[in-house]
Image (cartoon, rainbow, N blue to C red; front, side, top):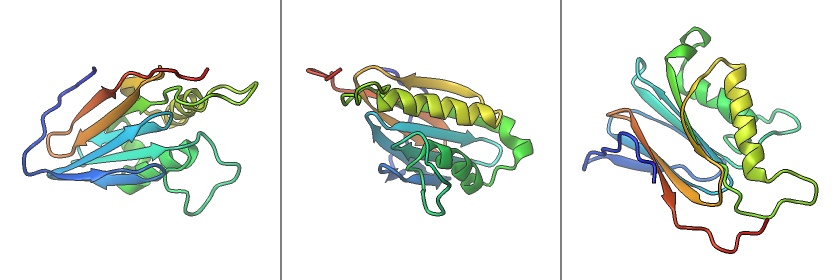
Length: 168
């Protein structure tokens, strides 16, 4: 279990971020997602007092889509930065947390597992923008829950259950 700075106020408003969605929060809001092979990308912008969480299903889209939300990592990273209101010259103020990308399903013959591809895409798209990942808990065969407390600007990543009988 990896828990980092995990303190959540009792009166917090919890928002579950479902697959393919992103959410931005502030104040007493807590953003949370349950992840398997999906990758969760959390951004904490301390100076802006805002946090964001994207729950990405797939690494890349063939063509940019107007309403892709966070379905694709390639759309979620720039979309989350826009939603937070972070300007390019402020990217160094953003703390990034990445979780998920487990091997929960069998990969198609000759393809890398989708979880691993999601993590690779997240690293690539974050690095491309000069964003530094301050914490990551990725890969393996176990699901995870990521939570970001927007008031304290703390996060936690907790493993969920032990995987048994995972298809390789």
